[in-house]
Image 1: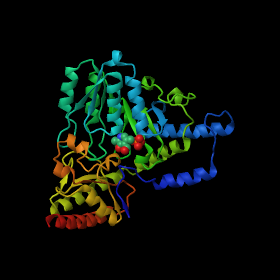
Image 2: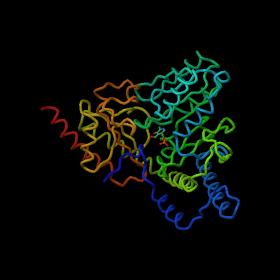
Image 3: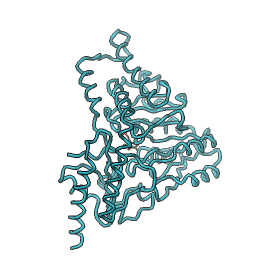
Image 4: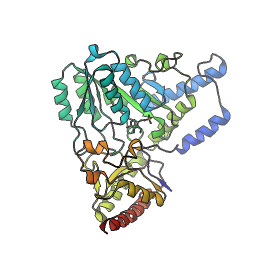
Length: 385
Ligand code: PLP
């Protein structure tokens, strides 16, 4: 079996599984907010995890607000910056056309509910945001942009955005950059302090930690308001008893990933060979090919073949890929990301996402290559009848 849907959810990494076994057997278990000894022990463990996460990502512990994952984090940041703020910080929201629905739906919510105006920053055919287009939009709306939301790496194509350059543009324009780093952190080196990002996000199930655990990175946590009120946990920014074991696994996974960064460049080389071999044999298109991309992500299309048919063929050979982001799997059309990049329907419909991670088995790309070749040969033959 080859699991090639790391961008959907990464399996728990070995070190996290080992940590969990020991943790569950040996405790401590307690409410980390309890004043007794066990509560304090649990709290110390959770705070150590916060400090370690901060250290790994070039942030301060107080800049980390633990939560359930990126959808919650993004919703909290939008709420904090936009709710009842239209008069203060401008009435414009700028988002790229390749954002995850966690961002798009938030922007549309504040448009419908509070009268903000949402504008889409154009995307180039290479999958990167049109930075000059963004500059122009900001210039034309000086002082009116409440926030700019551009992701660091796209979940479908793996294309990496020039987030630092974008951060500088936002800083100069005195607007906030909300950067969805869900797919980026853990797959490439990242330093929050030098990133020029105002708000970034980590989600456990994308980095080999537990699902249902994540955090917001906030340059200035004073800008945040709680979306979940409750009992004052997370310095009053996120009510509810903390998922402390889940948060501990975030620190374990980030520590492991930092040690495996070298392996990511090996993965990238293997991916490049894999893509080159496929291009030699088949008339395939690779989305965002000319752009910097995440090491283990390939979004590939054989024009005229249906992506879902390819996915089913691969599944019959015990290889698990997806046709686009998990949420839009049932849509037999070109994904909105590829549409934003101006990819034609014929190509877009054929796209299959292959995403691996540093814990993928050796030789995974060779096996996928064999299986994909078989699938393409079979489906292309069927198509020509
Ligand atoms: N942003 C991106 C780019 C994603 O890929 C995902 C998950 O698919 C999310 C946000 C949502 O993350 P979570 O599942 O942690 O809510």
